[in-house]
Image 1 (tube, protein in one colour):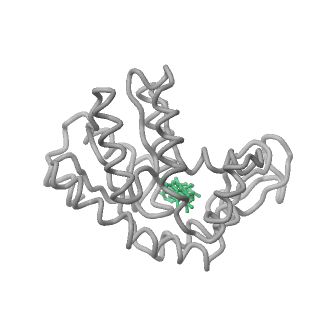
Image 2: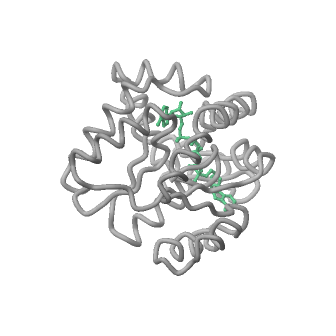
Length: 220
Ligand code: AP5
């Protein structure tokens, strides 16, 4: 699952994961978990994440390599936010070759930049259970507390506008060129990520089921 920060990669991956019973493998989530546990890796990763920059390739490639070996990935997996540059894509290619499991699709979710900034600056998350809220679209009925566990709701440290702009810049410079990389192998599908979450999911499922012609998927 590819796309700029806030395109909906995580949201859509979670829904696909539930539908197809395959794990969502998110480097962002795994790194945030390491940060929360204050592991050595987490301490290093936090420095990059708080600045909106990419964590070192060696770290994320290692994390993915470990994760894909776990038994729940045997029937497939959804990569969310990995790879993010050509070096990571090449490392993934050789990893997948090793386990004889090529990528079926690379889904590129596209959303205009101002909508992305609005989505991300308003996002809030529960400090304890990770439940997501949005100050405009989905405020907590309990104000500054989580509806599910009553813990404090906070803003992700990289969801400040200046950091979001840097994440978008990094995306354009390092990640966007992967569209060409995967386009060349014929597995790239583009889809419009504006619009309600369920409609975006329906389009994704159509593409995966092979019902959406390539050209339509590109234009929709
Ligand atoms: P990561 O956690 O992957 O963040 P990101 O890709 O920058 O962006 P998000 O996860 O915030 O966006 P998303 O596209 O998943 O959208 P979401 O569904 O959450 O990475 C964080 C950091 O970790 C990176 O900056 C980097 O430092 C490091 N990192 C991670 N992977 C790395 C790698 N491979 N290499 C190196 N470093 C790495 O939705 C966002 C918001 O929009 C939510 O509030 C959601 O509810 C809302 N929303 C979603 N869809 C819609 C819709 N259709 N309409 C309205 N709102 C919507």
